[in-house]
Every structure is written in structure tokens, then in C-alpha cells.
Image (spheres, one colour):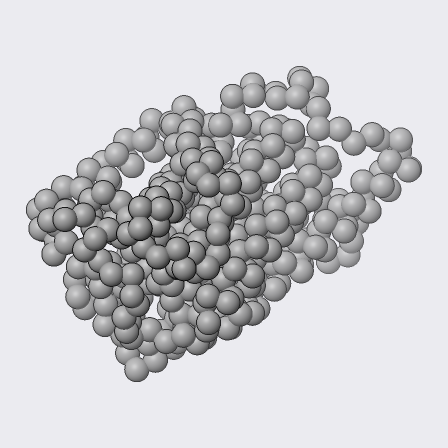
Length: 463
């Protein structure tokens, strides 16, 4: 019997509490993707593909993100679940092994993303307090965020709401300052804005856009966190469609304008060194205290991203425990509806960030976001595939059409765009400078996860 037929779409009690409000979900989805991947990671594509290539890469990644959000919105409105696409993979994909594999890979990717964000935050804090090592800052921040997440989902949502609000305000301020800077330069010096470099539109070849796409796509990953939060949101069927419809356009607008400003005024030849191009622009705009302000904003962005990583990874582990893919203790929640064991396990593994004691923080950060970006692509592929299979199941009569409370447009082309484009990005990354190492590490990790399926014989092992 297929998984589709075995599992009922009816929701059961989860132990989690629906105490996230609409404003939490809206700001989480808006600010959750604005993190260190944009503020710091953008230096890498600017250097490797130039201004035009960077702008095209971010617009393309934003389009893929919007398509993914639409597919996820349809699934989340039909089946609100804190495990999101991992649980949907169990419902709709041909064999439970898919759900098991993507669940564990995604959990590990969020843990490594957490380590990357802790590293970025520790790196920034180290600039202000050079006598304190980066790894010690990583530990202190991890302990504080773990305590917040252990209180309740609402405490996480409230913390994320205000941290995201800071990031959104900073992006709007940066776009305004950048616009004034461009018009001032044009008026006083006769400088003409252009995306063309001295060596052409694409200084290192247009194909480099595909190579750098994993780092770019990493900047947008986190949008799928809305699907995870659906299971703990008040009235998800009413809230999610409103969030999904507006969030993609807003994120593309914010990213497009911010990256456009950087592409026009930032010297792309500057080799990435861990500093933020955003700080450079504000410093050269001549605004008193702007450099300090932007640095603090980037620090809050790293904290926000780490906070989201703890939430997402713990809920994924909780979901897998409920589906029989992880030890049952990770599915237990306390009186506040918090999966304590899952949060603690996530925090324990995130101590990998302490390796900054032995590896330069900038190098360690780039390795982490490159590896997590690849798993993020697999997650988006899974979302597109699940939405395609769900709609086909509805057409066959396996599910009632009334479940489609939000309808993703352009079926099946949108789902196929998500699947094909993310596959291309994964392959393209393997041709980057560290592509072979990234490929080998990912394949080894996937083989370990798949092998553990057959070794541990999970409860859902019979497809």
C-alpha cells in the first residue's frame, strides 16, 4: 500500500501550542531571510561574478524562492504541521526513505547554519572586544538563544519579531541612503552608474553565476520556516494565504533594491575578508555613526538567524520523532509545548562553531554556508515535488479538493521550475573552487544518512 493511502490527512494532537500570532509569522517570514547571507555573504558573488551577475543571481534566486513559497503555501494551508515539508514528503513521495533522508539532512543543515550564524555574530563581537576570542562569543550567544527557545514558541516569536523589525528597518534605511549617494555622485562628479566592469559585463565569465548560486540561494533560505511555524500559529488557514501572497514580492523588492545599490556603488574588486559591503557603503556615504549602526544591525541579523535556526531544527527533530524517524524522546514537549530534548540536541551539535578556535572565522563561515545552501536546495526540491504529487493526488480523488485552501498558480510549471532550477544550482556549485570538497562531503553525509535507514530499520521502513 502506498504512503499516500496509509496516512490520513486529519490533524492529531501534537503537544505543541498554537501561540504564534499573525504578526509573528509575517515578520518572521519577512525578516527570516534577511541575514548574514545578504549582509556578509554578498561580498563573495560581487567579487566572483561582478555587479550585473550578482544582481541577476539574486533576482533569479528570489524568483525561485517565491515559487517555492507558493508551493509550500498550498501544502501548509492543507496540512498545517510543524515538520512542514519533511512530513509532506512522508505523505506524498514514493518511499518513506525520502522523508527520512531530507529530514535528517535538513536538521543537520540548520545546525550548521546555526554554527555559521554564531560564527558571524562572534566575528562581529570580536571586532568590538578583541581580547575575547570568537569561539567564546559563539558559546555565550548559543546559551542565551537556547534559553529563549526553551521558554515557549511565543518567546521565540516575540524575540524574532523585534530582531526582524530591526533588519527590515536597516534595509529600508540602506536603500534610502544608497539612493541619495548615487544621485549625489551623479550631480557633483558627473559619475554615471553602470553595472559594466572594466573587463565586461561578467568579469570572470557568465557561467560563474551558476557557480555562486548556492551562496546566493542561501541568502533566501529560511523562507520555508513559515511552513514549520504553521503548526504553532493561530488560525493557520486564514493567516498563511495572506502571508504567502505578500511575502515573496516584498523580499524580492527588498533584495533587488539593496543589491542594486551595492552593485552600482560598491567596488566589486574588493576581495571578501569578512567585512560587510553594506558597512562600506554607509561609511563612504559620510553619515556619522552609520558604520557602527550597520555593524550592530548585522550583529542582530546574525542573532536572529541563529534564533530561527534553533527553532527550525528543533521542530524538524520533533516532527521526525513523531513519524518514527528519530528517538521518541525528541517528540516529547514540556508544559509550555516546547520540545526540550530536540532544542538541547540541536544546541549541543551547534558547538561545532567553537572550531573557530582552530579555523579562521571567515573561512569557516564560507564553508558552512556553502554546505548548508546545498541541503536547502534539496529542501526546496522536496517542496516542489510534494506540491506536484499532492495536486495529482487531488486530481485522482485520493484527497478532497476542499483541502486546497490556497491554490499555487501555474500548476505544474511552478513546481517544475522549483525542482529543475535547484538541481541545476546543486550541480553548478560543484564547479566552484571548493566544489569538489563540498560535493564529496555532501555525498558522504547523504550515504551515512541513507545507510542509517537500513541499519536502524525505522518504524516507517516498509514503504
